[in-house]
Length: 536
Image (tube, rainbow, N blue to C red; front, top):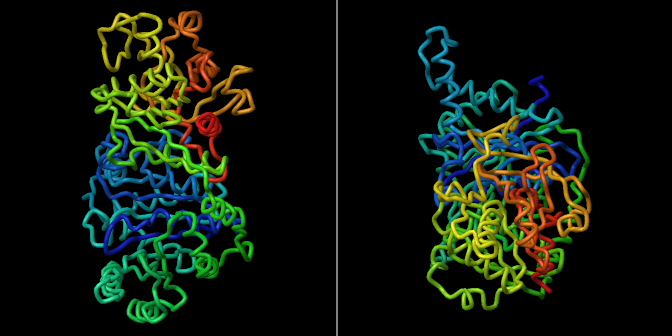
């Protein structure tokens, strides 16, 4: 029933990259702690269907949901901060919306009508918002972030759709939260509210009056400036919230709570929930982070290291594992292409662990194999993720088993030893994104292995994003002559999911992406094992 639906819409103005996603996730955390079930969505104005085919330099990492949707990295923030699992309904792009509408038009579903932005595109956006609210069946509040900035031409249909949604659902079932930048001019020591006023003017011209305004700034915003914003932007004084830059992103939720933003939302949406969000575990975590004295340095070897957001979930997962041991994890970003012409002894001189994350394509793979060999031969703790596992097996095949042209079909279709291959017969019955294994699959763990000892259970579920698999024809050769233990196997397809080396302090690699399930207060077992070994 639509009358039961409650939405919070998070918009941004003045500039992009204001941290709307962090604000949206922080509010989600607070409301969840008040006993409410939260679902999150991101409306992205770009025309790609999803970020799956985009360069990580363009868009940061591709985050994968448990049901196999390739999504924007903001969904990772939502999952980690709110501590929830999202679905394919969480990610809506202009590309998806326009494709659906045009497909319907081609099938004659609009009975020959002229297809227009209003009502056809806006109706499709609203349909997807309602589907998102209903995706899990128990949602109390759906928090929706709209990508881009007010004034962007490509975002206009999304703004029009949420304007219409308030008309359909009513004032008390919709909350508009607008994020803007308040610049601080050091020379005059002043903060300037004029850009915020212009941004809100732009928003109200689209028929949307914000219910709260979040002012992002590098300094605290004084009462006078807040009152000025409230007056000129037509909101209550208590609805103007200061969002000062913080060292630790988890502090944002506590700052919003101090300014009673969650109370404001609960009252506006007439939500029946607890009177207070207990954030004591969050406070304890922040205190722990601020008190950390120990440090450890690990190398992350990849080809997109110039943009750290390309490996955001991996770097966050390393941090969370560090918190378990009261340790700050410093990442040494190693460009795998450059490593091909460098001395690994110098590159990895003070490094206590090496991690090779996922990726696609042949560029930089030789450098990753150099890093893997170095970790293997020097007994340095190693964690390989997705491509990191495939390259580990190729490196062992070439260097230990003597199969000199061993390779992946992805890199060398002419190889006589396709250690990693595209195995269509093993994909029967698997839901595919094109030809990729995407989303959550089961993995059975072998007792008395590192993997089993870390997970402490024999059946796990992990998220995948890859096209090629280990070729099981080589399994016994790796076991007998390569010292490889296949410690995790998919019980349905017999596909290899985790490998480890017998005589090595910690050499573990997995075909899945454990980083997508790591949380600030629940670090992932494989990352915990890796950091523990690195500290030793």
